[in-house]
Length: 266
Picture: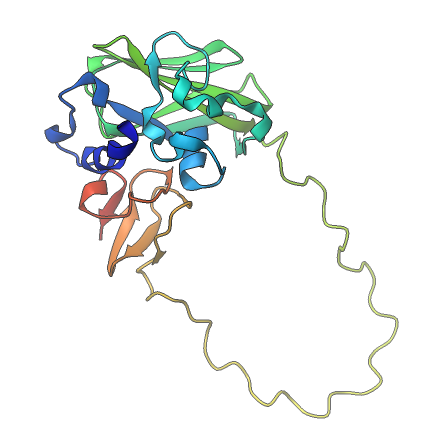
């Protein structure tokens, strides 16, 4: 049942108004959009065949106290599967984790763990958070590939929401090649000049600058599966929007009236 209603809840929950506060504790949802959590990667299609989580990345809810990526929720065990070689985001020593809350609820704490040890905690004192929440966490004691467990502890229920975020701290341990291409440019000039000069100049010269598919200032067309950063401008259905919250886009969260927490019309 949750799978069927996930996106209506997501879109309605993005409106910055008191109506976004769910009347039932079971309707509180949220996930880390950037650096992209494992469920965000599944929702964007970056990691395929994730099962139900690809349709409801905001729904990894389970009792407090777990140290698992799925929080112990049997519906989302794929998030614990290390054989999938989850893509890791290269980050610095200080990392800002951005949450998108598709339905807000009173919050006790936000806690971040690395290797099972707590590295940061933020106390909301049972307040209702905004539709987007950001925390800057010091990871300077770590280097290389790490998995950060980010936990949103709900204030008036026994449950929490769980996210695992794979990062390369300090830019080491990257999954991308670390050596330069073997076809590097020659280090010396050619041994001799061409025997003959061109018989004539090119018949036509470029007369205009390269064109784009959108008018200047309107931004490129919005698309799912793209990592947008704050300030990016996109166009959607003839309207320009500016990104308010860094995130990886997913279908059903296109710019519009229901996603004002992410996109501001210009």
